Length: 128
Image (cartoon, rainbow, N blue to C red; front, side, top):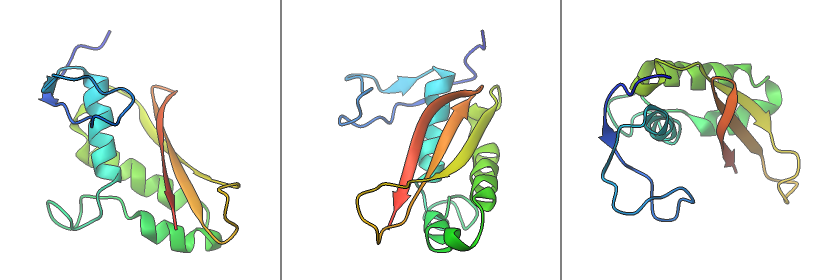
């Protein structure tokens, strides 16, 4: 079993199905890695800590019809490897997918399936 590599603030919101009331910090390495992944992937470049941190989802929403998902996956994985401290003991991968049925034929839907050591941990979706 992998030992915790440190503590981090507990950032789950009360609306999150896995939210636990009264917790202020976490020493669960997987929980901390998930929190950091969400923060990196849901932050736009330039919002915090300079131009390098953040995933530019809008870029892929407008361009994915003309290219494969490889660039989106490469960018997401690079962000995770560079900025998610708690990812180091694990094999974390982001795999892109399209959403075929999102209820509106004029909307674009893309997603990232995040796997930790080969098991799906969560997916994040972007649409216009």
